[in-house]
Image (cartoon, rainbow, N blue to C red; front, top):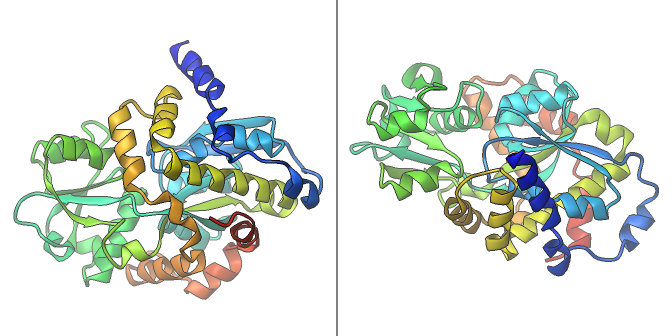
Length: 335
């Protein structure tokens, strides 16, 4: 009952999106043609870096959607597989977590980038670089998680064999973040609000921040992907979903305080201070500046180096990307 009331308060308060100037006249929508479906299902995970899709409700309604659902999934590859199984229609997910199932033949289409850098790698004293993780214990949410795929690619990039050189630790109870806090593992890779929590508790130190450290900061972290059949059957709906989400991405950069309050009220996270810190640290407004295809190419190469996929980048791009909608939106929504 309390969650339902929070959700109602969350939806009731979203009129501020219109006040921010993000809901305008439907001229462009009218020119695109009839909306083929008014239903969209969007994946919900524990991370709050993908806040844009959590605050896009009113923007989606302005695009003509009447049945908007958030479907809970596990982060990483499991979220991508929920797309392939038809359980959700859209998600924001870390690029490698999308590329791995695409390489396996799953019907997923990457349609654009959402934001850069949200992962941070924390380590205990004496560990100063990724190379120092050889023979160490590293905590991740799971072996199919975004954290695992990200760090595996990073390890391969510096010459480590992620399968042999790193001792991976995943646990549901206690969670890896608590194992790290208790000194039982050597390093932990987290996404918001986990880095904010560790800093508040003054635990460990950061050896990689994907928002500022190269080469990771040069590419999208989370990308937008859709169920392939949805893109093919509903191209007008696909573009309108993307338009709502990228407008919500701008909103996260323009009004982080209000977005932080909305995602707390909506039950997506508990701590306002951690949510606000994360929203201010992630450069949401820069989605126009990065090249989504370069991101897919870069991470496909890293995953191939790590032995996690067999396909070359050109095949991944040819088989499972569609940039036409985002390219149109970049022209339409000039920042």
